[in-house]
Image (cartoon, rainbow, N blue to C red; front, top):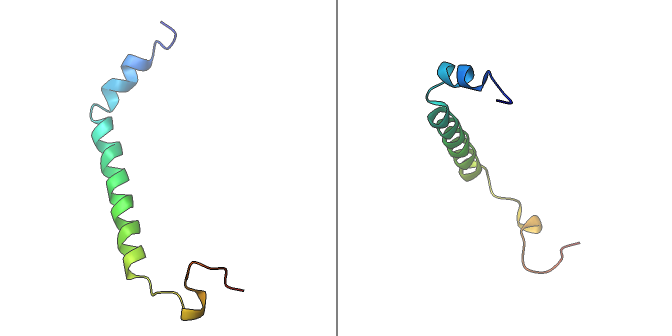
Length: 53
């Protein structure tokens, strides 16, 4: 075995995949809510398909 402590670590966190997925989803939802609540950019800075200078 290259990593003999690997079995020991897995016994400490039996639900690691669930915890990681849950953290990802919480962060994703928080960022999504903050992005949707942000005010729109001013009209002179909105993308119109051409370069605005």
